[in-house]
Length: 113
Length: 114
Image (cartoon, rainbow over the protein chains, first blue to last red):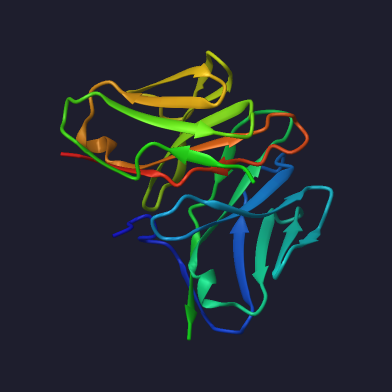
């Protein structure tokens, strides 16, 4: 089976409830952030991004909030569905500088029926 | 939609074998990346390439080499596979145009070295 998710913090949410997944990023110079979703046995899938000149960005059922003061990023999923079960991780980048991203280790979201 | 494909989903090799992992992207992206993903460690960058025949070492290049002869294709080579290279290998690409440098990932190759 897939071992990527071992040792990860887990968030268990009832189907239909809202989920909030948090990420503390490391570099105060980071100005571009991405949330990825990774299902078991698959590669990471882009969900939503946000630039540092924004505090909030909304997508379909997802919202990303950025708090630069405390270097914190959160992903909110509305009306969580069984298909949302996956590992979610954030990535930060200094756009225009290095090509490199810094990736979080992730949070496993479990949706309870 | 961006599509990044990897040549194998699962691969089993023996210690000392030479291993090739292939990655192809269809969006004319400038940048391509190879990562490995291990439990509790997140994604670690092995190598990346910002143009054909150009490459730069990432955080953990030891034991690996890469090749980018064509823009759409980026290969990861394990010259002599070792058991500590058992991992999930992920390829990614990004446009490199500076305005939106989102990395898009392939499905991954789970490599087991016996």
